[in-house]
Length: 454
View 1 (cartoon, rainbow, N blue to C red):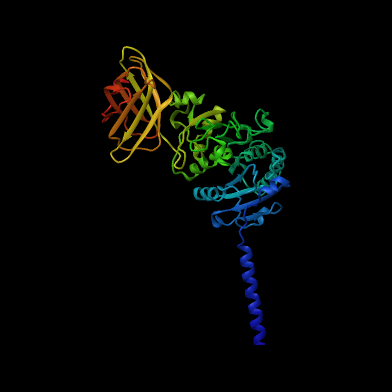
View 2 (cartoon, rainbow, N blue to C red):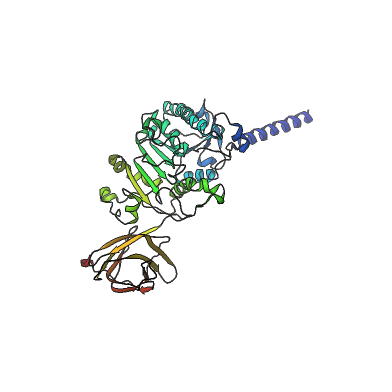
């Protein structure tokens, strides 16, 4: 009798351990390879579910009975994370960090939409066809959520490349009542030039934002949202390879940069100001630093916190914005409006280099995207974007050059120069009566500005 009791106890404990192990099983995104891409894959949508309680261990959400999972809180906001085309079949390298950043930012349900079987196919056109089917799958799930009490306005869909259009198709099925769609370099091929019903558009959600980082290749070129961000002009990204000899990074670096930029905004480490502007050239020329139409709210920020400008952006319908970034995190740059008045008898043309130093750190920018014109007693306003933020600037160094080495060196006589920080409330930096000789550094200490001169 005692032996039988011991035996049953052992069996019972073993079963408990087995159930516990089974309950703790972590689901992972489908991992395929080039072989699957060559043979093609049939669509299969898996929903990987995360909360703060299981931030590093995904649970598989049932399509039929998704709310049997006790951790799914219908009163909490839900974010869908939707990848794009996977020509090699591998899971995205950014996936786990993206989920972690979202859950660190806010208590929510995160659903990673794993449609790797269906996105892995050398036949891109077949994958494009699957986007409608994925959207239908998500529509069915969200209908169940709404039926069980979820608020559509609390749903945020983040779509990468083809995932952006999947988000749009899903949102359109709810007549734009979904709260927010974030499109990260939405796919261009097969979508460029299409009518709104065949791609993402502002009517697909209460708030639609789109980030463009590869519009000259894999991304979409024109406006798609209430606000569209064109990072570094929307095409070539700093630090990305310029030639095909760099391998696969040449094809995907610009496109993928959109994800890392948005992740940085979720992480909240370094805010980026987005400047409304008609073109990148005007932005670089410093003609778009005034965000007056946003009134007291000021210029919108890029990324996760752009929701704070939602009401204004929706009223403005579609806003095109630009910003520059560094080549790696922290991506944000620090802007100054530079106002210069010269008093040369003749108009001078050339480039400027500006260096800021606080005695321990320094940062430099070359204003050389175009020839700058300096006309007597006419204020020239320029935009200078520095890689790092130098607080308590003690010294400024200027260098003027014309790029014409065979001609006699010219001198640029500055009546005044003023550097006004764009991101914070620090006081402007000024200096008066300077002489810049071509190709020579001139270093000076800034002094309080005489506002009456500007």
